[in-house]
Amino acid sequence: MAAAEPPLHRGKRARVCYATGLGSSPPAVALFVHHPYHLTTAYLRYLENRLRAAFPLEGTPIRMMLRARPRTALRVRSSAARKNVTKANAEGRRRKAGRR
Image (cartoon, rainbow, N blue to C red):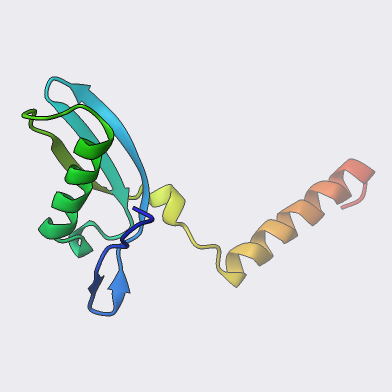
């Protein structure tokens, strides 16, 4: 993927977080992507051809599955969330010290 980045879609580029192998008959690869709908079929064909060049998969169908990145990884900590965490940490330190 470093050789050719995914194309832009409405000014944003799909970012592939990681890929994992799911099966072996036929080979299946799951791609975890920030925005799966930003990847074009041409780019998926490019990835498939790169896999075929790297591994002996001539004549074997390869299933490519796009999955959205898990929600827990997408969580963005807002300033309010950071304040709540620091407030809870401060309260915990006070309790340990015997103060309220």
